Length: 445
Image (cartoon, rainbow, N blue to C red; front, side, top):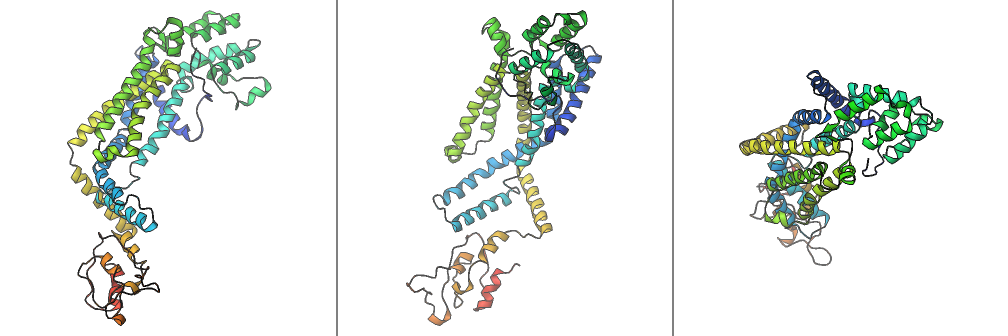
């Protein structure tokens, strides 16, 4: 059939953490196929188009949430970049803590957190993987197609030498048999044979009938023809790969449109994402941003390379998924551009404040907790400085005993226990000139 050698493990229906996702979306795929069959349409490509649209619509709330976070990130990025530049080159613990506090206040200002955009991705990722596993093992999820394959598999099992034949074909098609228990006994079950048959292209079917002439019957040929019809688009068997048709007909054939369209659609999606997430010149000059930009241009060509070696059905799904995602992205951005982001930020901030109140965490607690770490002996309790900030009080390392002179260590330098705290945390100067009065600075209102 031609293609990229991958150690694929189909295992009929996928198990593990992906099982519930694959089972649910497999049901949708099966129902959709049977519904189309009722009106005389039995074609995997058409089913795949409708299936992709339905799944993308089901995932729309997650997509909106992710895209809204992207716009919010673009809005915050100049402030976060400014903070990073402010502390650039300073790696000591105190500086890193102060930088983290300032960045946290930016996130609080916009009512979000650095991890807000992770949840949609974490939920979406297993769904995407499960979708690919369904496409790799369509007969395991679509009853009508499974019925066609099972007749062929059972007839093949009755032939002498079937184990050697299917073992050899499985190796060529990169279908792993390592976890199939029956293999050690020289036996394959009908479901495992179907897993191998699922990867069959035109040449593989011809090889099967040539090896086992007894299978060359009206029933078997009818099932094979039906399978080829179901997996056919513009006269191409989409179980074959573009590389197969390139070897057969040269590079001027319609099958090569699939990897080309995969590259074009991925590039369009990447360019749209870059345009919408642009945050300014400083961010564009950032090394990480430049690396991400490079990946935006490189990944589409990787997509084209894989689509050239994979079966056409994978490439078709890849293109459909990208096109639908691209359209969703455009319409969601139009919606977000016409929505009130300030109102959304205010709503998020209110929700965050309520959450903090419910958990017993007060706004700005991180800054006050930092202030509590500093010793009261470094506070000037004879006369406070006129600047009403915690950094002013933290730097007043004098006592009434030396008549306002700065307290020093043995070397004559200022007390090393006095440290700088972010100026953004404002406090009121105490009226009483006593240690207890200054200690009250550490209490919450």
